[in-house]
Amino acid sequence: MTAPTVAAAAALTTGALARRLGVSPTTIRSWESRYGIGPAHRDPGRHRRWEPHDVAVLEEMCRLTARGVTPAEAARVALAAGTADPSAPAGTADPSAPAGAAAPDRAPSAPPGPSRTVPAPGGNTLPVGTVRPECRGLARAAVRLDAPEIARILRRSIDDLGAVTAWTEVMTPALRAAGRKWAVEGERCVEVEHLLSWHVAAALRRACDRADPPSGPAVLLAGMPTELHSLPLEAVAAGLAERGLPFRMFGPALPPEALLEAVRRTGPPAVLLWSQVARTADRTLAHHVARTTWGPHGARTGPVVLAAGPGWAGPRRPPGTLRPRDLATALDQLERLLR
Image (cartoon, rainbow, N blue to C red; front, side, top):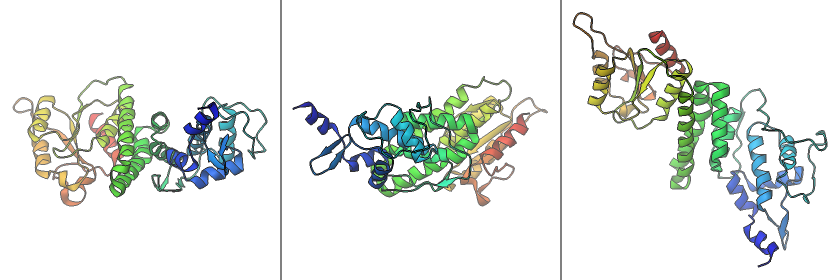
């Protein structure tokens, strides 16, 4: 097999490339006609075949536009990065851009301004609605299974926005969109949710680990015994770490006796019990936690219990507990208790 034949065999069609990038074939053809980002090889009959260096340019184009860079500027930077075929035509790139401009060390930050609605070209997308640019980029990277880009977006979102805002406005909408996609399309998209969830957990753990462990009485964080959602608790822990507040994380699905024993042994000033859905919100157990005491007779004390999460909505909140309306409120209440 000759070298050109080998290259052609390794190349992708426009449809296959669109599925890989999580965009529509129409978008790729539009970028090709407007900005000169085209394939170096065509089959007889003018069928496009995208070779690895062509794919690399389009992957960079997707990353840049996901961060809020205009398509014209993104095309200029992607082509200037040196991944495109040198023989490819310059096309109709942004005429206002200076000739021979060097590619930046990293992509430009998304410009300030109101959130925008994510377009939903083709079927291989996560429709996240009206969101921050960072969330749009995260959803697109997740569909492409682009693990390095997912990690980069999450890391910068936490660094730039803080753990609370990053969780609420970047991670949560993308996770919900992945969950909806999985529920509708079944196993076809479960890999997207699994990859995204793992990286979200890793990013939140990183936010906890980089802070110096604070001293003093620690908040106890736990999910209800039948509650399997762990990421909201990870977000609470990251928020506490950012504020320099001590905590002990026991994770989801902590059995009732283990939960009560952990409260008795650690003597926390506050206990946050997470429930994602109504069926996991055990009011009786939460009441027992609130009534648990420790210390010498005559000076016994007990914890303040925060019933956190949407599972506690409505009349399900146990008497004598706090019901924070959102994660930021929960952190404010915990900080007041600890300070």
